[in-house]
Every structure is written in structure tokens, then in C-alpha cells.
Image (cartoon, rainbow, N blue to C red; front, side, top):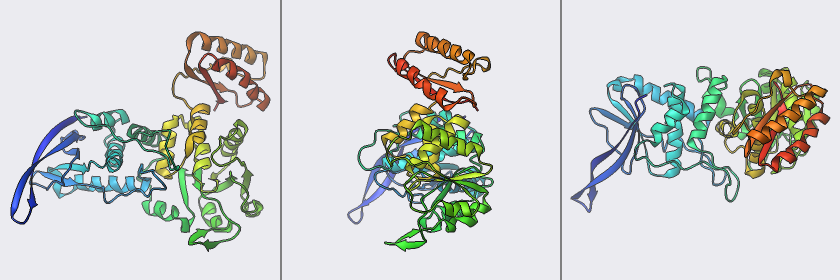
Length: 425
């Protein structure tokens, strides 16, 4: 990949006080993305003008994030799709002989969102790795990018970077979650609206996130509420077989059951960390369902995103940051507050040192399993100080045996080692 960053001085005539013109020198940071030296990303202070050899365009005022509080991105999946379509069209159009410059302003929030757009394009269509795309974005004298934050009120204790977003997109692409050949931006934008169900697919055909149904459909204080029956047609059309409720009961679960859907209650308090038992039960529901699973808490953002993130990490090897990034791109505002992020990072994270138990030594309820665990424990203490270790368990382990590992966790923590355990796929 051509990775070029230059500082360019543009002379721009700015009208000042009627007929007096002042020539202003504007510093522009430019990154080249395309192998044929055609696609660039620039940060400018003054809007540039097209020339015979260069076409400039910006999406700062076209794709705008709808914030909940102080959050400002990343932009959602439909906006990313429309950006990619726009850029593909420009590259193939009559201006194909010109250099294309996607420019953004020095507004740090808009700049970060623009960087994710063009970086994601490089990952999806130019087959760049996230690291290659990000290196181009920060090469030369380019400043770094403001990290994204959650949708909570107050200070944010966790930053999601542009690179995290690119890595989450790449992981989704690898597993077939992201396929713009079959993606419908119209459907996405229709069903994400509150009046149409407030639903987003995180794993197409497998896991759908939505907000809680209510006892009956009505508009309350200008806000549309939907009864369970409002979802039946869409769920059947998309082969949803199970519904998981994580919040307090607002409707009777049997209304879904009477319509042929499985309904599961896995309540835990908003803003708190789900227990290991809740996580295991959620994973079991997703793994055992013959169709898709629709998951909701009250708003379908915090608790919902947290448990879906655990599923992504267990079955598709997403890191914590990749899972959070992908879920927020699919459903903006998801995973809120330190408790939810901590659960994802500490229970199912694959960052850091990952020690995989060989198949011959898979932990089980047998004497061999106990011996393997003791061997694993010694190995961790000898070789993996200040680490995070993943322990793969047999799918047939009993809950009691899995819970017994907690005593080992306590011992390991004293040595700055964190043992992370979950079922073997």
C-alpha cells in the first residue's frame, strides 16, 4: 500500500472588508491510501476548491452521529455503507483520472468519524489490514484522533480508538457479519427507528438487539411503545426462535411463548455486572437455539450489548475492544458504564497472554482434569506473571466444577495473574 503523508500549503483568497483580499496560507495534512496514488485523506482549516487534477469532498455535514449524551461516534453501519457506495462511485466515475481527497475539519469529533470511514473503506475494499490503514492515518505529522466514549452521563473511563473500530470491522468482515453485497441500508434505517421496533442485527441471522416490549402498543409522551405482538411478523420472517429478557418484567413472557417463541428471563440490575451464571445461561440459550435470538433489556443498549459481546468473544474470538466497537457500529450507544465493560474485559477478553490447554488435557470432572488444572496453575505462576490467561473448558463440565475454579482465580490474582475461563467450543 502506498502510505504517504505530506504537509501542503494552499493559498486561499479570503474576502475581508468589501474589496480587500488577504492571502492566507492553510496547512493541510494529507494521507495517501490508494495504490494508484489517487485516494487521499486530508485535515483542513479552509474548504479547498476542486481543480483540473483534484476532486475534494467531505462527509462532515452529510453523516452526522445522533448522540445520547456526550458520545459522538462511531457512525452507524448504514452511514458506513453509504460512504463506501459514495466513494466507489467517485472512483469509477468520470472523475476517475483525478486525485480524490476526502477532507475533514479540525473538529476532533468529526475528524475521528471521518477517519473511521476512510479507514474502514481501506479495510473492506482495498484489503488493507486495520494496522496498515491506521498507520497511514497517523503517518508523518498527522495528529492522533480523539477516542470515542460511551453514552453514559459524566466522565468516561474507557476509550474506544479509531484502530479499535477498524479491527472490529475487520473481524466482522472475516466472519461474514459485514457483507455490503447483501446489506440493505434502507432496512437498517427503517427498523432502527423507535416507531418501527428499534432493532439492530449484531450477528445477522443469529443475534438481534432491541428495546423492551411493553404491555400494549401506544404512544406515551411522544414515544412509541410496542406490545410483544408488534414483533411477531418480523421475528417469524427472520427465523427468530427465542427472546431473552434482561430487565424487569414489563410484559407477560407467555405472550411470546403462546406465539411459538421461547422466552427466557435473565434479569440483572441495569448498570451492574452480570453474574457468571447469567453469562453461562445466556450463552447456552444462544448456542442451543435452532434459530436467531432476540435480546433486550430496557433500552436494548447496556445489558444487551454486554452479553452479546461475551458471545462474540467466546465464539468468534473478538477482543473486548473489537466486540464493543462492532456492537456500537451496529447499535450506537451500546455498552455503557464501567461495570459492563469490565465484565466483557475480565470474563471473556482474549487480550494479553492466552494459554490454551491441549485437547489431551481438557479440564473435566475427572482426576485427569484436576491434575491438568494443578499443572496449569504451576505453569501460570512460573511463566505468566502480570498476565491474563484464558482456560478452555470441556462443554460437559458441570456448573459446580466451573465454579470451583474461583478459588484458583483468587490465588492467581495475588500473583497479578487473572484466569479467564469458559466452555470449549
